[in-house]
Length: 110
Length: 113
Image (cartoon, rainbow over all chains, first blue to last red; front, top):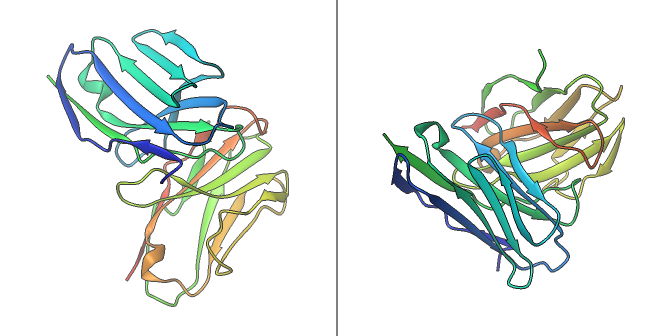
């Protein structure tokens, strides 16, 4: 079993839809939870991070962590074509050595 | 520039050859990371530098891979006797501190024929 499992997609949604991206992990020591966004032929960029269970909101993005079930989610409200990218979840023990999921490719159709 | 830069952007080589990939981190960033990303996969950790020293090289797949950062700034990833399985995008990232946000470069796309 991989440490981090993520549905690779692709996921296609119409513009304006609410998007739900999910990951599961197996390592109980993970305590930092990050989401990265990667556009085609670019490096990943940090989108959101949280340290604890619960919700964290930033504009149209909400990160949700449930440590008891080892399940993390990223919600995107009012999705835009510019949100089309691959989203990588990265639950980790610390910031030094980040372990990534395989990524979910999202396409928002105008 | 303000971001992490990597050169070359693309490298095509033949099996058995030696290659060097360069990373210029953001000025002042003490931590530097190398990752490898194969098609359809997330980035895979290779090595992490704090200053000039390799703090964690547990991700290097074998002794054909080596990385240096002699002056605590620019880093070079060196691959000897390249194999077709080494084909991937090699990403570099830097952060101000080991626990700070990581900023990734655009990567070097390595193709081994």
